[in-house]
Image (cartoon, rainbow over all chains, first blue to last red; front, side):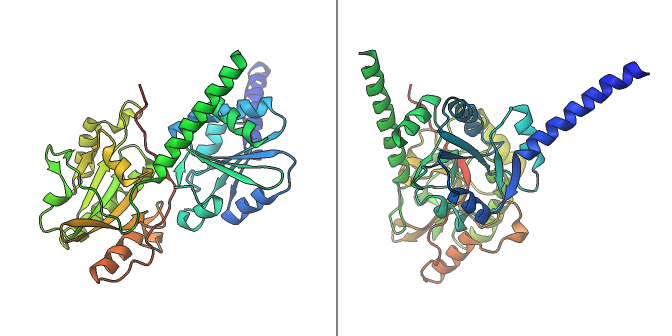
Length: 159
Length: 207
């Protein structure tokens, strides 16, 4: 009996720990909360990548962002999910499956026209899109998918 | 030497990239004369602005099969057509996505989707992407409301259908309906452009 229980416990605990870990990195936020995030002081270049689990070009470029941040200590990566706020499990499951380690915030406000221009006036609303904020608070915005090389060049230009 | 050429290459890549973005932001603005098109529909017929019988305008919607926002709006697109086509403003949905990039957006899949959902409006295929480039559409769904003035079709509204893709019953601003209402009364459109999160256009990649 003991023989059976132990693997079961191990299995359950890894499962629970995992779930905990992705929940620690995940939060549903409002647009004012997003704005607060962007206004926080930081010594790093903060990279806000707008994505969704159903968006193929977004999912494709996410590992590039994680790779570039892993190699560059001057970056702080934050994923902003445009997924359905009524179904947060889709995001947390995705995070576990794809090993997303950077924090993920689900921006839960579908009244898009009220806030897209506040993120950047040049943004049409298509995703993926990425907002870069330098330590001095200056902002650069890019709409559309990037390759890992393009992303590195963009960051190089900000330095 | 290798470093320098790599640097030059990355400059070229960046320049090409910003050119593409600049191209995206071009297209028609409010008050512009919209270009006519002649596109194949899922019914096997052709659709163009000038051949719309008795039309006072048109609700041109850049759409596709695969985008969850489009899927969320399909019923509302049908409702818009059923309500406004009899008043002279039919919906024309256009898919411009390259099926090589997005296999679910092929012409055959368009035919399947139109049948499945029972689209009452023409669903046309912009295979060359010339129409969406001329209009300046950047995402799906992306609406262009056109009003016929003489033989021209003038752009009166560009943007989203309404302000809640998730729940039609929770909508508080009906952008397209409000714009048509104003246009029909000969009044200025209050919200001429709106933005919404949407799926990117799956552009054909250079060979």
